[in-house]
Image (spheres, rainbow, N blue to C red):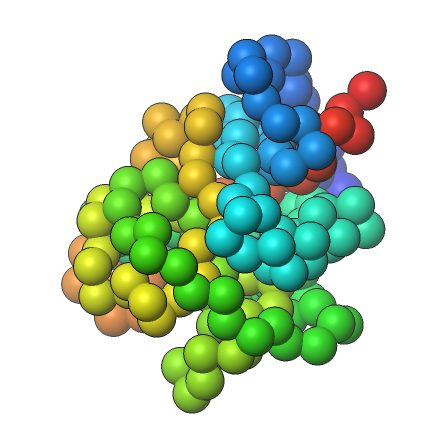
Length: 187
């Protein structure tokens, strides 16, 4: 009951974001729209860099996997991670097999979206992804770039962050992706 009420409140708060127009010249077939209680985030998928990862994200979006999923790990100045629609805490993945890395020469800079993976192998990306708050050259060539924010980086900046000094960046009572859609599917 409390979860249902919280979800309804989140939808009401997200209503202004849902009404926002999409950026001009957006390839709607390859753009992801995330509505949160703090606003809308739109990112374009880089199918030219990571076609298998982009297809996985679209597949999971269309299955509703990401709806109401928290930004479970948010480290100020570094990144905001989400995408665990299985356990909702950063330990889960989808029902699909892990993906092989699709590395590129695109650097991890502000607004870049990358695929999260387990630390033990570069070929363990599955469903989780992260938004960069700033530059992180240490991630270059170690993680797959799947996209870049084209609208709503100010919303990413507003996400609730882990307390200063938090080693793992876990967030208590995190912000959530209320509704996630492929832009071409928005009615």
